[in-house]
Every structure is written in structure tokens, then in C-alpha cells.
Image (cartoon, rainbow, N blue to C red; front, top):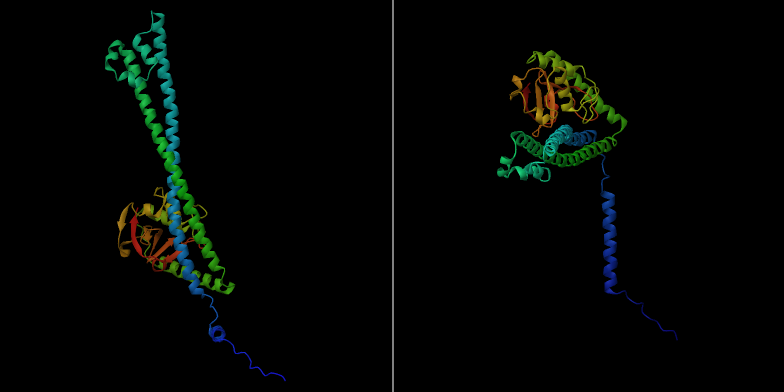
Length: 346
């Protein structure tokens, strides 16, 4: 006779696990159904992020420019010191040769003076510090020894100075490399963002910038073009001649520029040498605090850290090299992206 067995009931633990898993699956399915697809950043959002990266890149560019300028200055100073050391060593050799000739003459006339003999075999500094020995020398010998001592001390000082500058140069080169990488990193990030835009969106951004530039040019040309001085007028005219030239970080002309590269080049055409970086340029000349007091050709500085500079063009406009991807152009001071700090009349 067949036995009738009751089916085995699932354990309470298993039921709980299955129920939890089913609930989780339902929840995930519901979330997936209700989740909005990730939205692509708008053209304006991309532009805002790109502008911020370009601002950071320009800040790093000015630091890069400062490090490069310092490197060039150190290299010149080291070269000058090394030339001086080489000439000084020749002079020292001549002085020693002269003392040797003196000793030879004494030897031929009856033997070398003990004091001269002592000098030729010892450190002249140590020797001359023993004042009692000076009484044993002729005035001519004393003069020769003092010249040698002075020349040795001078050479030692110059060699020590060269050594310190070489250390500074190595440190500056390291800083230069870091800033260059920082600039390139920011520019690469900006380009990556720009690549997310369609061709139509890129064209729209370019058209907006072109309209803004034309508007700024009209404003500048309709305003008063009285310059602060003849050289300011000459610098301004030089900058105008470069309208349309591309921005390239670290460039000082004549075919491409960064912001401080343009201003330093423009004033150089007027026969005026000004510092290379925007921060250094902000510390020269006469400071102008009010926009209303600015005159055409004055240098104008922006952002709290003074990392951007242009030339005042009148009527609230500037000529400047804005950033990578742009050209030397007119722009309203209100759209630079950072606050106006002050102007400088050179």
C-alpha cells in the first residue's frame, strides 16, 4: 500500500532570504525604470567649466613665465661670474708668476729671502696673517703678496656665489617643469570638455565671442582715445597692430602672445622696458585705482592674484590676449572673468 507523504515545507530562513531577494529585485527594477538618463552638460555649462580651466591655466602660465625669466637671469649671472672667475684666475697666475720672478732674481743674487721661500710653499692668507713676517719683506714684495691675497679672496667669493646660483637655477628649472605640466594639464582638460560639444554648439560659442569682440571694438573706438603719454600711445598702437594674433602661453611675440607677453612687447615697441610677468608689471609706474581715471595705453590688471593684464582701450574696454583658443582682441572689462584690481600708468 502506497504511503502518502506530506511535501517538505521550506525552512523559515530560506523563505526570508527569497523574499528579501525578490523585494530587492523589484526595488532595483523600479529604480531603473524611474531613473532619468544622465544629461549631457549644456553648451553654457561646458563654457563655464572651460573658462575656469583657462583661468587656472593662465594663472599657472604667469608663474611659468616668472620661473623662466628667473632661469634666464640666473644663467646670465652665472655666465658673467664664470667669465670673471676665469679672468681673475689669469690675473692671479700673472701675480704668482711675478712673485716667482722676484724669487728667481733673489736666488741669482745670493739666495731666496726666507720669507719669500715660506710664502711660495704656504697659503698666502695664513702667511700674511703673521704680521711679523712682513718686516722681512721689501715693500714691493708686500704689495705683490697683498694683491695675490685679495685676488684669492675675490675668486673664492665669486666661486661661492656661482655655486649658490647654480643651486637656485636647478630649483628654478624644477619649478619651471612643474608649472609647464600644470598649464598643459589644464589646457588638456579644457579641450576634453570642448570635444563633448557638437560642431553646431562650437560654432554658436565662436559666434557669441565674435559678436562680443565687435561690440567691444565699437565701444573702444567711439570713446575718447586720449593717451596718457606719447609712449603709452605708441604701446597701444603696437598692440592694435597685433589684433588677431593667437594666444600661446609663454609667448612674447611678434606673431603670438600670452597676456603679459603682449603688454611687455607693446611697450618695448615704444622704447620702454617693463617686467615680463603681470604681477611684476603691476608694481611699476603710477597706480590708477579708478576706472574713470584710466587713459588709453594704461596697463590694467585683473583677478586678486593679478594674473591677467591688458592695455586700456578707452570706454571700459581693453586690448588683451585672453587665453588659449583666442586671439588678441578688444573686450569689455566687465567680461574678463575676474575683478579689475588697478591700472598702471608707465
